[in-house]
Each structure stands twice: as C-alpha cells, then as structure tokens.
Image 1 (cartoon, rainbow, N blue to C red):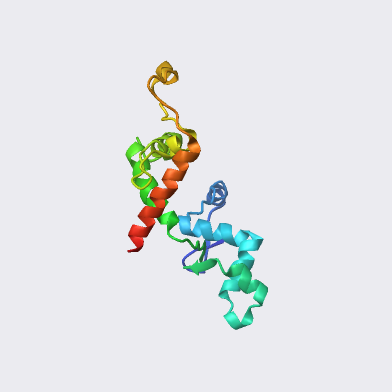
Image 2: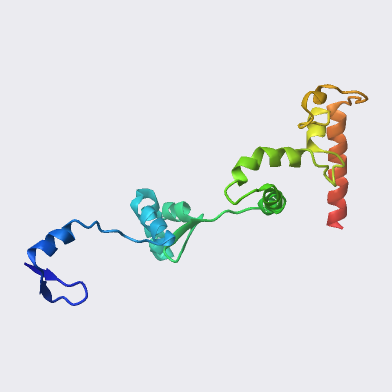
Length: 181
C-alpha cells in the first residue's frame, strides 16, 4: 500500500506488516508551555472574543468592546490581564517575597509556609506604628510557639485597644507628613 512521506509528498510503498506496525504507534504532540497557554485561551469562548477584539483596529471596535478589553493586552499571541495598582502591591510583594523565600525549604513549599509567614509578619514590630499589628488589634503579644506557657500572662498589663489603634494612627500620620517633606 502507498504511504505519503512526511518530507517529500511522494508516495512510498510500505509492506503490509510494517503498515500494521505503524498503526500501533501513538502520535504524541510536543508543545511548549506558551503554545499550551495559547491553545487553552483559544478554546475558551470569552477569551477568544477578547483576543479577536484586541486584534481589531480601535476604530473598528464598539464602546462595549473597548470596555471589555481595557484591562487586557496581547503579547506574542498570548493574552495577559493588566493590573493597575497604586504601589501597594509592589510594597506588599517587596516584604512578602523575601520572607517567603527565607522560610522555604524547597521550591514547592512556599504555599505550606503561608500561615507561618503571616504569623511572623503580624508579630514583627512595624517601624512607623512602633508596635506589632497583632498587639494593636488584640491588645496582647502573641506567643505561638510557647506550648502551655502561652496561657500564662504574668506581668502583662492590658491597654485599651482603641488607645493603641489611635496611637498607631498618630504615628502613621507623622510618618506621612515627614515623607511628604
């Protein structure tokens, strides 16, 4: 039986037993991660609609289409969503990422350390406020790793939470005034 060669377009005769052998092989498709993402995006109806509108010239789009695509950008045929921020995300990331990295035991463990990182950040004194956020919110210093000793509160005097929070506000306002100078 004749078989079309993949490189030449000219039919090649293959014996019957070899043809049966070829039919037993599975075809595997090797895709890069980018090609996989593109394929997934093109298979989703809403994303395909957004991509098609991004490809259009601006004067060809309606106001509704412009509104739908305003937070998206198409780079190298892959759709990305843009995020507008006021710098807070970058500030959080500049604190959170190094703490996560310091707590990771291997590359796949960062998500298992989130509670520990949250605890560390909530119990670290803030330079501006002058206290830990946990103490300001709950009026006591947390002791997470002290076992039964954490129930003993010898020598800890409780303050009014409202006073602590007001002092934190005053400290923050002072810092903001100094930064603006």
